[in-house]
Image (cartoon, rainbow, N blue to C red; front, side, top):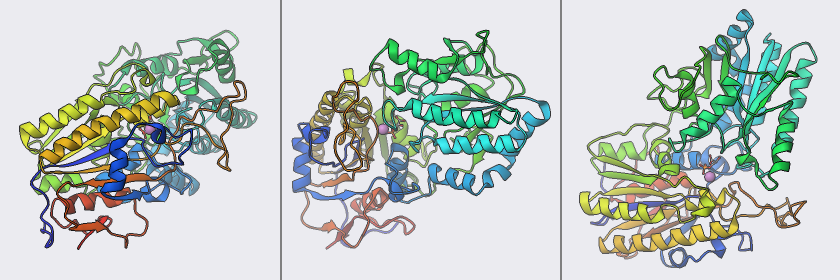
Length: 549
Ligand code: 3PG
Ligand code: CO
């Protein structure tokens, strides 16, 4: 590691603050960041070294600039200083080139069904959000399974409404049903077997609520639950019973035959593909299938199946062992660089985003680089709907950062305030506005402390969400809900750029934003961190956002 000639950093801590889901959008009635009380953010914009960063599309390794950003690709890019082709792109290419189907895992799972006359199950998020999954990947696999002799397949679909429009489930179910019917017309037996809202079953993350996974297990594996003749009937019934319910929270269901028997329990000898490519919400259900000594809930029955993930979700623990597409091998990250060069590090968030500043930050690895130098802290998230507690754990995270620096004199801290994103996903604009105000207030307290310690803070976001709380059409006009005639809530992320501010009270014009960096994005942050510590960044990273005078 080489020291910079012109800048030796500050004596105090360097603290990187991710304001999850807080981007810069059009200043209108749907922008909760604009509507919130944000004196601290406003002052950072005016009075600090500041620019905007791309946080979506090709800037973070997604297939196209139509793809919104998300926390996985955002934290991967910030934490590694590099742009890797991400799951969405790698899987899309592996399927369109048919390479995935020539691989050992696909062939092993397929042969298992063909040779033993067993069923191929597909479980995953049914939408084209391209954050965790894409429906085209599922349709491609079903087509191939049919072409390659698999007679029976079952789909267990998790309804989205979080990465896509909040009540769009029937559109995807219809698309899937049509595809299954076409395949079944030639004598095969392909059906939807179970499902439910993604925030109600199966897709828990970071151990926040294992009961979700248990509820998913019951309908997918045991075939136990409220039974309907089709997924469409289930969704329509749930909506009529609870008008206003949005897809991500729909209850679970089982599809039954004419006698009410589940059409698609998962049995010994079957093959199971979990078709999400993103790992955070895939790891727990994967463990339920693959772990022998599982104790998170009573599985009742643990079928002996061949189980594969779309990707390997954690390379260190090999979860799962079988996977269809090689994940990006993210190496030489900022965390590793700092550990090798003897900097102390602290990573903190609340449960919902804890893995973002650890697992995603470190290139989708669950472990640390150095036990001696790194402390990771998780503040347990509330387990209530987040619109009821929009302040979430911002104050507690702030307290813990200050406490940690006081105690350990930590040089580099990274933290994530989950509010703008987690409350933004509820679609509740009032709560989201409060959530952003709460974060701004905590940020103000943190910056005061950093100033006292003669440190620096970098304040940025990983992608947008709170900055657009109502859906717009392609011309940018607000869309109205057909029934209520009110503006239609938007629950998903946005394509907007994110703020990037360097709060450095001792700043004396030693550096400025480097306008030679053309398309400034999240992957330029890691090199900037190392520069602000007073060192040159590794050459393989994207260039720093600052240049020294
Ligand atoms: C989720 O998993 O909650 C959403 O699909 C994406 O949100 P995140 O990328 O902000 O975690
Ligand atoms: Co989000």
